[in-house]
Length: 238
Image (cartoon, rainbow, N blue to C red; front, side, top):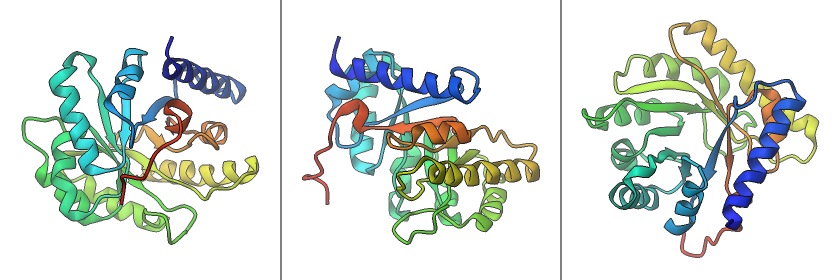
């Protein structure tokens, strides 16, 4: 058994325990393996261990991986999620290669992703990124802006709004983590009340250090990277 497979099994067990602890239905939380900066072999090892959802932060690196696996491992049926900031001049490759985008934070990006989504592909599943902590260093829109952006996305035929995503402030205590995640849960509930026709079933929140609090607060998708693949090497990244 590879170390990656062991890590995936350990994380899966932790997710299951966290769900049980707070009374969540088992398998209501999905694991998104964050594979940025990691080689194709590491992704292949994870996929062969049963992991199907992978998240990438850098456009060109992500596109290269999507292309590689579609050509060399088409039977793996990997679902690719883009989880990094998107510049307006990089929307086309994201629209053409990914199944999900977690980081829609303004109307221009939503419109371009919609217009550039190939007609032979299913609608792009998108999440609105919310800056719940108000940090200047974090991407995402303010909470009160979510409703207007959601209304726009609901009119775009090549996008399907599935929910919200956030990266809260890095705080060590459980109570603060839980409070921050509950903000996003409450915001999604308010959004669902305004848009009962939308399938708002996804809260992308929680990473290695705050996964349990995110699950208790209602996360449906946790983004885990280092705990699966090991430490990252950013020396090749600008």
